[in-house]
Image (cartoon, rainbow, N blue to C red; front, side, top):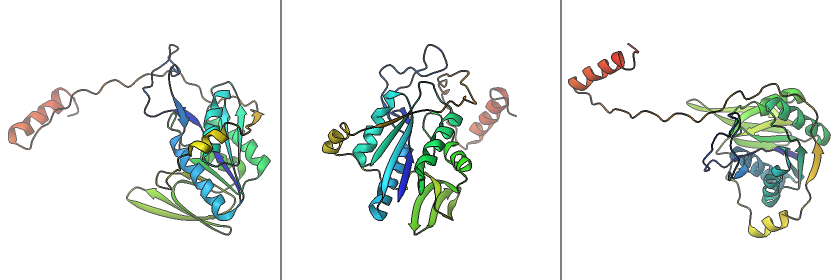
Length: 248
């Protein structure tokens, strides 16, 4: 099975993120970057499919030379091959999607796996848009995946329940938390990954369709007020909604 996994490099969710001096980007000084957490589920699922069906796992990312660190992580986890599509610009989803599509056309994967979203921009656009460009079926937010021959059965979470969908290979699947438990690379594998080759390709010249106008840190929430169901508190709640919140 020829498996393609698309990943992105994002700030560690445990890091304190600050806005840069330009007001349009984050301050990267001292900031730790990692594989997008949802993409880790995609990598793990790709490795499990290879272990069950044979084949190879190729991991690709779009970015600058600094993005090689997450590709080393993918190699340490067990990926067979990694590709860096190089660009020094800050790409939007449109740029990323078209460059991923070029890689997919080159290697003709049986299945393309991605995280459901990146934790930095949260657009949830890449997986379905990539499928549209390639003319492939797509299932997003998948929490359980079964492949038997050419038949794909995907379970996804929906509000209040589960939804089970069937499609066929080749297809695009975006991973949701719960799909699997990503493996932790062992130290020997981390050391070996540092010596493995990273294939580099230049990004195709696609203009971004969106640009960041402004970026700001959310304001601190105001202190909440806890009221009971007593007559006095109910009257106070009505007063606050009328005089302070001005919603009634």
